[in-house]
Length: 382
Image (cartoon, rainbow, N blue to C red):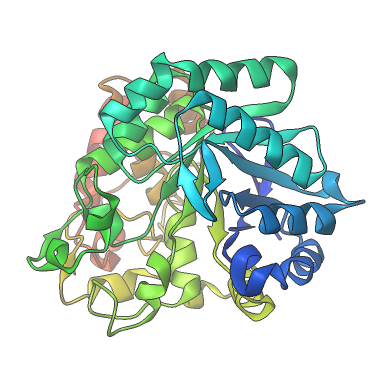
């Protein structure tokens, strides 16, 4: 298993993490099996958004004696009421729900306290200016949570949260179909058929800005909905009109700026193993570029996907990395010090480009690579 820095938190999380779908399936009978397998595979990052008391208790029992082996991303503002899950901003309910979480997990510390499901600007303003954020800050000050996070499907809201400096981790829905959708306060539109009736071209600019802002500020991203609820793995259900493999979906997410861990939804040990196979997959098995280029309903023409098809460069330039740093600088309107430093330590830079066009000819998305290299020379100099 490979591990990545989760932004500036100091935490190292497994590239493949685990969502909690399997904890509630069949009344939680697979929880211990899933945790045993996760530990065996080296998966150390677990998300727990569910407020289901049985799932929480089962996870607490399964973690007994090995709690320190895992990094928990557990959610504030999610409670169990009248036998079902409910999102709340009522601070009394929020506190009671979090105290129940700690008790059932048999722990006094959560690595990431995730403010749950903020998809509207109005809701974000309520959270940041009200008692929910104050409570999260108090928990962090007391050492009950290590870092404050936020989960969202809306890039506009997520970007505001990241810019505020109040959060250190963002849980965000990342996959090649959702990334083309404009910001919306209705997350159902991400998988609504109406959203895909017209051809879609290139990533939504708000999402581009979000990923690049997270990278610039050191806000770590943990990924949900990497398979689009399974739809992307089924040709008849996929909005793109063509099925992808788990490896392709995971690799797409892990090549987005600031992404540290993909939290896969596994309802069984077999499903978790299937996702973890990514770690030993070949580059051909991970490659999503050729599949994306053949999607009948979607086009990324002209947009760098950081897929690496431009390699190898005769001059040894990491073209994808140069392009990523260039895009970060463009997004800021200047060159942040951290970006400049990362660019400076590249073994070969855009200044060495001889414009042979070998990279540009190989690009499946018709990216103007040579022009990007020229711009990088101007932005970063020699």
